[in-house]
Image 1 (tube, rainbow, N blue to C red):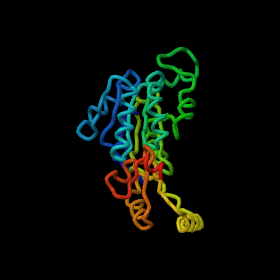
Image 2: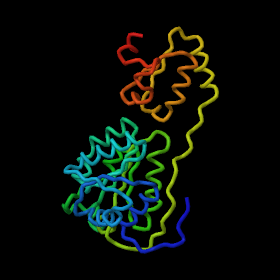
Image 3: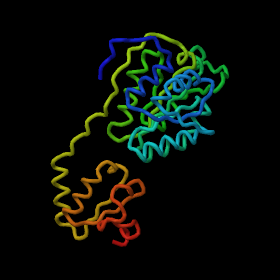
Image 4: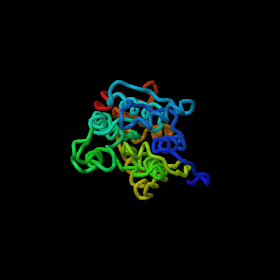
Length: 266
């Protein structure tokens, strides 16, 4: 992960879009609003590189991003205004958290001088980030355009490392429209997975060896391990059943796949 040596003047909105492109995002979802205009202006300018899909309600944007993540395996990114707009997405963010889906919400914030003063500014909330942190995996504010590259990279790292999940970043209205020299960075990669403990593998093998009717139950955590699950099932000759989020791992027309009803009976 390296800095570009050729920094250039960017608005906060331009810096965010530049960081998304560096992380190979080519489709986003969003609903424009006053606090997000600088960002949507930039998306329009880069429509040849990143596609923006609009909706009439913030929850639709969030659920489309969730669906994108689930169907492609790539992060789903969406943009909404702060306050009521961001909180309209809570159902989708909770679903993403429950399903371990990599979803990034980029939202706005009232102008920096008014944050925390309780003056009743448009879409002001007492502690937007604090509320979001009770739901999402990670959340922070981008305070300067120059900070966007490394903060967005950290958002992607948090979203994709370990157990995937939703994250959010916010940027104040005035910051998103202000300009300064920004040094773009290469996109990031998730942390390497933690290797399983050898003794845990040995214990699992011993239990399988003596089991009378073993069965593999897969959930959302096995979404990227279909080949491994299939190989294990064929090696030990055991059926595979799935929870809701694991139904795509082993196709239902495979000989070893069991429906949830049959698995319960088994």
